[in-house]
Length: 328
Image 1 (spheres, rainbow, N blue to C red):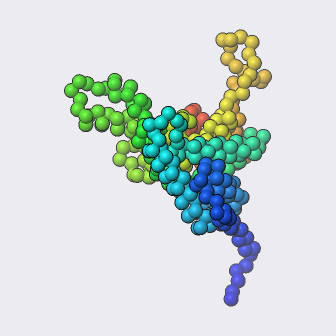
Image 2: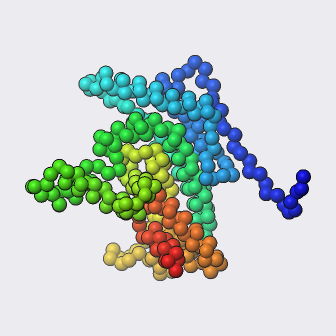
Image 3: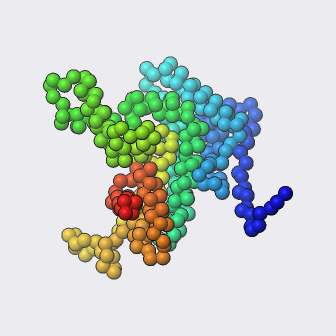
């Protein structure tokens, strides 16, 4: 058999699927603590295990996958039955809220761990953020599929109860400004849809865009929501990446100033910026990088900021830079 000359690329090592842990006669759905003890190894493997392919999360064994689905189903079903039988009692009852809260804490802790691993040198920061986010996001999507039952039976119910990223209270002001006495129920419904469309436009969606654009825009809006809103697990993970990882990097350092009305200045006379803003400035003004590479990195970072729900001036600057180059 003929062989080609030159060095052959090394074959990437694959992370083996995580096997189903032995639980004996224990029932993982018996309590939140037992369910979480059953879930946590899978979550750690999917989100945190080292891998050569950062765009694909490590897998778990099919039996383990099925076991997690069954455990979540049994746990939430038991909670729902308990709630229905005791909802008239003066007691605190949960139907998935506790599990959802544990997942939120897990993503928060993971994002903080990733931030602790960030380089101290601003020039290396973006090179750390992009692959770090891609690995985290791939894991979040995998967990979202793994725990789809939680989305379908807890998140969906919470959204139906007006606890989602866009609530009735959010649109009341919009409707109140435009409503008239003669408006029919259909007109009111259309005005609610208009408000939702206005919100999605902030994330790049336009009426008539394909379904993929709508899904992305809604995911961005979910990630941008406040921490009290109930959103799908994938968006929950992205929201925590924004709050625990990116927002500290966007924070402007405190600088002492002599007068209350005087603008803050650093010792060299410039307005202070957060670490990520300094890193972006260095990226866009670098003379050592070819334009195509700078454009690629700026575009990737802008998309990351959009996906996690960041709107501010830094993302706008990256968007403007990328679009001006593409138009040119």
